[in-house]
Structures are given as structure tokens and as C-alpha cells.
Length: 152
Image 1: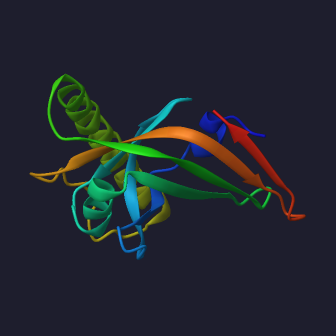
Image 2: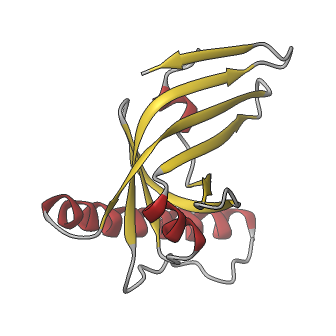
């Protein structure tokens, strides 16, 4: 199975699935700030259903597809919602740096491909929370249908 860093590299958004206390599912894209072997840090600036669901049920599932190999990956874990403190302040600085980097990349891509974007600059919302996903297991879904599960 690929390393989690290999699976998530070159991604800017991840779709996360949550569920409320009545088992109603919700899936929504979240901005991927950073990741390592233990945690995935996502930005939620909408603070809608995903945020409400995670306050009552901290479990999350993330789906990622490798289009080169047609291999799918499911990442499951528990979320800590980070809204203040030292970790929040550090992530705020990283988010500002990543926002600039991605905005510059979008402008360069547009110029090189004569492509138009409605919004070149990624906006940093006034209010947002950080979903710190503690990775518990990763399942590789092979094209043959075989499942390889790895507990972390």
C-alpha cells in the first residue's frame, strides 16, 4: 500500500464524509492544509453540516482516488476541532503561506494556458475552524475489488 504522503500529495481539497446523531450522512469538500503519517489538517470555512456533525460525532471518512492506477483509498479517523490556541495560531501562519502559494500557481497556470479563472486569489475567511483528523486506518481499494486495510 502507498504511504499516506504519496496518496495525498498534489491535492488541494478532500471530500470528507460525516454523520449526525440520527445517522444522516453528509459529504463536503474541505481545503487540505497539510498532512503527515498521523494527522490530516483540513480547513472548514463554511461551518455547516460537517462542523455540526463533528461536534456530536467526531468520526470521519475520506475518499481519495489515484487516477493513474485507478486505485481508491479510504481514510478513517477521529476529528479534533481546533478553534484557538498555539496550534491554531501556527496553522494560521501556514494557511496564509499556502494561500499565497496557491494563488500564484493559479495565476501562472492561467497565463501559461490562456485560462480564465473567476477568482485567482484564494480568500482567507474571517472565521474558520481546523479539522485535525487523527488517521486510524487506511484501506486500499484495488481495481480487482481486493481490499487492503492498514491500521495505524
